Image 1: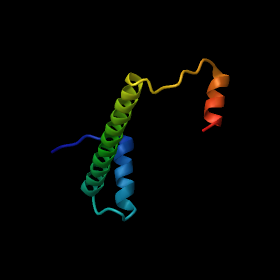
Image 2: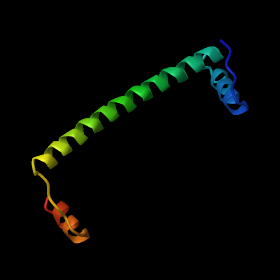
Image 3: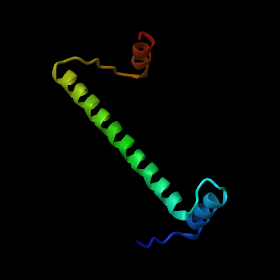
Image 4: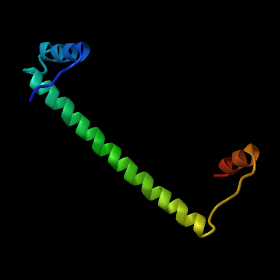
Length: 82
């Protein structure tokens, strides 16, 4: 596999190897890809959680479990009471 990097990214990879934390550029790239995979997994979990909460909100709306607030004052009072 051949990968092309911008000059800035190539410099970052070189710096990581020169720091001694990595033995070669391949290790740096593998670590970056592992971190990207972790980030994708976290994003996926957050989206799943958000979808669950939206579904709960829709269920509450359909069941009439909501409060109507007409202005900023009533919004402030609502949160102050909680």
